[in-house]
Length: 461
Ligand code: GLU
Image: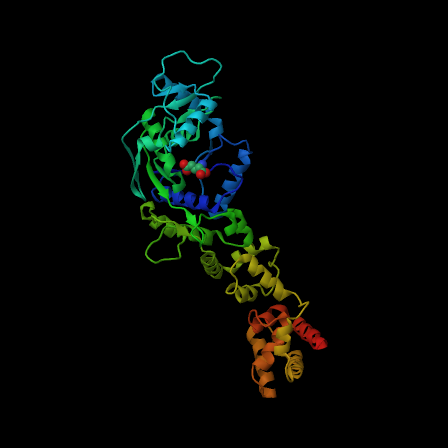
C-alpha cells in the first residue's frame, strides 16, 4: 500500500506551495488506494501547534483533501526519538562530541582562511579519553567519509552526492538532548510507514542525511520525489510579494476550490495539453514520475481563467450558496436565475460576481463622466422619455425578451439606431457604459426601478 504524508512546519497558515505538495501526495496515495498522513513538524517551534494544524486542516477541507488517521505531532514524540539516539550510541553508530562552540568557531575560521569547506573535523568520533568537564555534549552520527550517496529520485533521476561533501557526522541531538530535524523526519517517516515521500526540492540536500539515519537504524528507504519549486514570472522563488500565499486568502478573494486544485496540479505536472481537470480526473491521471524536472511558473491569469471556467459551469443554486460568503443573500430574489445567468459569464471570482450583482441591484449613485458625454449626444433624452412611456404602458414584463421588445418598438417608432437607446439607457441603469445585458438588468430590477433609474438620470442632464 502506498503511504504518503504532508509534513508542514507550523506557521499558522498553509502556503500554496505546501498545498501543491500536499495535493500531489494526496492524489498519489488515493489513486493507489493508499493512505495520506499529516504530521506537524513542531520540534523547534514554540507556537500554538494545535492552531497551526487547524489552519492546515481547514485549508484541506476547503479544497477537499482529507488526511487519514490522527495527526502526528513531533513535539509529542520526544521519548521515541531519545530511544533511537540511545540505540545508536549503544551500537557505536553515534557518539558524544564535547567540542565547545568556541572550538567549533575557531575551526571554522581556520578552514575559511584556508579556503576549505567549513566542516566538523570528527575529533570525537573515536574518542576514548576522559570527557572534558562541564561540557554537555552534542550527539553526532557516524557518517561515511568517502564514497557516493545516490538518491534514486522519482522526478530527478539519480542525484549523486559525495559523502564527504555533505554528511560531516551531523548532529542528531543538541546538548540539551533535543533531537534535530533530519533525524526526527527520517524516524517519523519510517515509523509512520511512509514509503513514498513527495516534497519540495528545497529539501534535496537534507535527503542524504535522512538516508543515513534510515541506514543506521535499519529502516527501509522510501521512494523520494523532489518536486521543483514554484517560481514567479521573474524566475525567482515565489514569495509573499507575488500575491497571496496563504491558501485561505484565495478563498476570501473568491476562488473556487476546484479552480485552486486544478491550478495547482498543473504547476509542474501535465497530461498532454489538457488544462481542465476534475478531482476524479486528477485521481485517475496523476503520477509523480510525470512531474517536470524544472521549476514551474506561477501565472495568476491562468488561475483567473480556470476560476471563470468553474464559475460558469457551476449550477445556480450552488453559486447562490457560495455567494453568501460575500454578503449577498439571494434566496428570496425572484429573478435569481436571470441574475446569476447574466453575471456568471462575466466574473473571474465569486467576489467580483457578488460586486457585479450588488451593482445591478443598487440605483447608481454616480455616473461615469466620459460615458455621459458619449451617451447623451443629440436627442438621447427624447429617446429615453419615449422608451419610458412605452414601458409604462407595457403589461407583459417578466423576461428579458419582454424588455427587449419595448426597446425595439421605441427605436422603430423613432427611426433611430440601437445605440441611441442602448447607451443612455445603460448609463441610466448602471451608471457606466460597461456591464451585463440591458434586457437582463431590466428584467432583474423590474419595471418600477427601471423607470426610477431613467427618471433620475433625466433629472441630472
Ligand atoms: N517540514 C518541512 C517543511 O515544512 C517539510 C519536510 C518534509 O517534507 O520532509 O518544509
